[in-house]
Amino acid sequence: MANKLELTWYGKENEIRVEPRLLIENAELSNTAVDPDTENILIHGDNLLALKALENKYAGQVKCIYIDPPYNTGSAFEHYDDNLEHSQWLNLMRPRLELLWNLLSDEGSLWISIDDDEQAYMKVLCDELFSRGCFVASIVWQKRTSPDMRASISDGHEYILVYAKTPDRFKQTRNKLPLSEEQAKNYKNPDNDPRGAWTSADYTAQGFRPNQMYEIITPGGTKFTPPEGKCWKNIEEVFLEQVEDNRIWFGVDGCSMPRRKTFLSEHEGVIPWTWWTNKEVGHNQEAKKEILALFGTKNVFDTPKPERLIERIIHIATNPGDLVLDSFLGSGTTAAVAHKMGRRYIGIEMGDHAYTHCKVRLDKVISGEDQGGISKTVNWQGGGGYKFYELAPTLINQDPFGEYIINSDYDAAMLAAAVALHEGFSYQPDSKLFWKQSVGNENSYLFVTTRHLNGAYLDSIKDSMEEGEYLVIACRSYEGGLEKAYPNITIKKIPQMLLSRCEFGKTDYSLNIVHPPVYEDEEDCDE
Image 1 (spheres, rainbow, N blue to C red):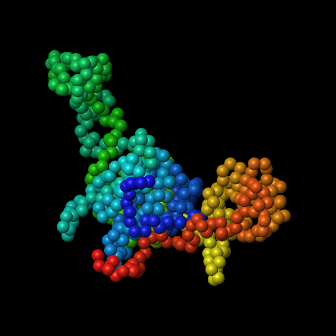
Image 2: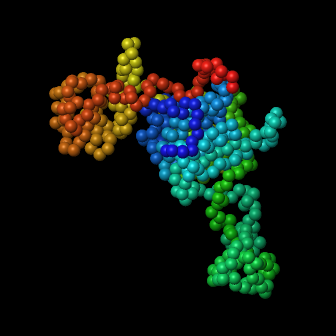
Image 3: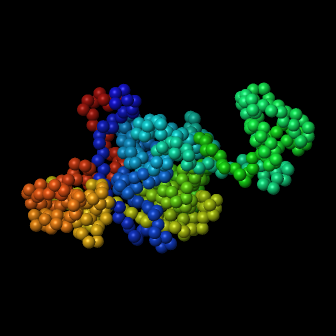
């Protein structure tokens, strides 16, 4: 589009072709003894590959996505100029954000923790990817309890950018926050109302409305009319009904200007706003204490978030049973909090933290051993489960002669499921007809085989097909001319049918930069 406002950076035009991988359960690492049917998932592997693996099944299914990505690339770019550093970071984030957005439901929301180093870049990138109309808020989280005395100006906060797939639907379905203890203390019961504690509010409204300009006589005989520029909150008929229901307060002596009573028992909650104090949702030191209690001093995680912070996000964005996803799981905080709050979850972690922190933490949650964080608030006693998945190896390899071949690690069922994933089919083997392995659109099927396809074999398949059915056959090789034998059967070779769509063999899409860039003109290095 001409004159489009966008963020540009080095490498933006380079397409990243991600291979759809199968997810294979590691039953030895799963924890399903208490809940064999659990839908909770912990995935070890590069999160770009993992998100691609989830795309078909979970597109439009996730209610809340929270991510705490690397805020900047730090020492990985010690030899790079600043512009290239941010370019690499943006190249890391863009494809992941695109996949995450596709996973969100229509009522879903995306929450991104970020600091000052990358907040502006992230905001503009998200505006470009999702549209500015999907932006909800930029929350300020007070992460410290005191200034960092080593800094010129100490950073006391981080941001949480919030985007909604459909902002109007998110507004209708998001939850309000419960009253804090401090707010609840404002509710008293001076008249011993049987409905319990209450607080009062001004009974006037701005503006002039003729039917709301009546005179009020209090029980003590005092007369009141609305102050200049204001009218009463309701028409007189409604006011008298509220007086009859003891919802109007005239003061202890019955002579004060009327105020409307609001009962604590009827309070629907507080509209979330963008200022989150460490008193309300925790701070860095609280988060580190939680990690120390779980893992000890030898396995301290560098940048954890407090459970109370994640609890607030999940409370606002979801209800029990909804699906939460974190693709930068780190020490496992999001999954642990979602588990305790009765949400389903998917957590993805690439490094050893998947084993040393995420799994260990969730096992303690399930056993009830983890009584830190929000456990006491939600009365967590243990239970539930999760399944542990690894990414399957790449489907296509190169032999010593440079020819592309099917990975020998794939058996027939894995191969069929993998090709179905690549082609956008659902792997659902039919119990009667061997060639109905995967289902696409209505009356559309996919059959994957490693055998050589000849005419007789193809004829036998055609004879068992019903009118109106369409079949794609992916095979190792086939006789010349068979691709034109039947108009409702398409024949393709593996792996040639897949090579143009994605990059095979890559298992790490993170930023492991070793060498500085090579410049054709040395003058480019002077800046």
